[in-house]
Length: 478
Image 1 (tube, helix red, strand yellow):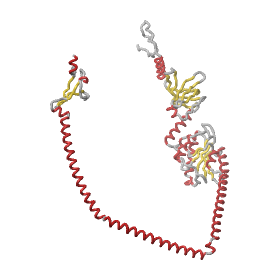
Image 2 (tube, one colour):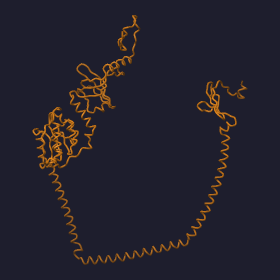
Image 3 (tube, one colour):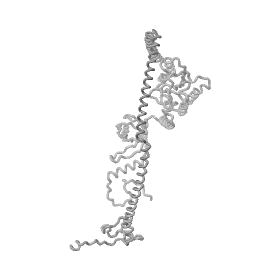
Image 4 (cartoon, helix red, strand yellow):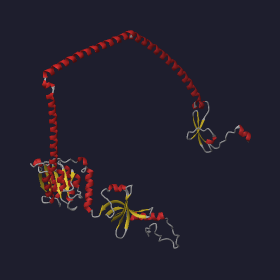
């Protein structure tokens, strides 16, 4: 008969009739056994409850309790997992579903859940699908800020993709006509809710991008708009086909979907996200009243600059008119000619003085050169250099001879003192197996393996006993 499975704490049902002595467990053993049972029998589970007693440590770990009306469960979300769950913002009172491994914190004997994933209750399949698609498209680079384009500052044509009967298009038209009445608005009506709406919006984006081929005015910017609604109502703006159509558009796109608290995949891919359709209209169209004020300011500045410039030229003209040139032009020209003659005379006098000074300095330098006879001095320096070179060569030869003799004597001395020469004379060197030279019997107790090096090889031996050397003082004491 097969023996039944027993836990470490279950008594042996097949023991002898005589009761055995009770086994006493330590607290650690009991706690470890409970931990093994929890991890093996339950393992990873989903738990739903309300968050309370949330504590965030400086290390990044988060400790909280999940409770319902009857019980509570301690939970821990480590920093490494929390960093991966950026969308999961825990708060006291929030009802969540947590997935993790059930275990025991042995130091306190308290069972707890090691949380790996958290999602709000009610998120359901749509939220999970939203997060999965968001991670996928983010990894492919569809949300990169570097690829997003700036909107034109003064668009001439604005394409709007939305429902023709919704409140969003009426609000946008009112704002666009009020802010920028010169803007031409092209509306492509589509469904913005229900199955197939994402494909219609994607097709409308394709039409606007091929507007030139189709003979339509090509927009400078496109607005994809829809009013507020539930997560299910806005779901078509989370479809992958629409996200890729927005990414492939050559025209900048503004996503104006839902209210300020609503976020869709289209918002992340578009070049600009507007909190609402009305805000989208304000973002793409400049304010005409503001432009008028700006132009008025520019006009005033231009008038001031022009008046200042005219005033300056008027002052210059008055100065010229009052000048000598216009009152007595012949006299002014004759005085100028006389001044030029004076300058010409002064210039010739100055150049003559400079030329005479340079000639005098040149004559002095030539006299100095003749006095020192550089050709004879150069010959003397060459002879001295040759003599110095011979002396240096002779000194080098003598120094090398002395060094060579000293080197030969040192080499002969080293040869006499070298261990190899000692071995040639019949001596030996005894070392331990590690290569340490043995200089005392204290370094070779009985049983030590020795290596004795002689002239033509090594001798291996083992010490049986040692006999220290008896000095004269020791023999007298004995």
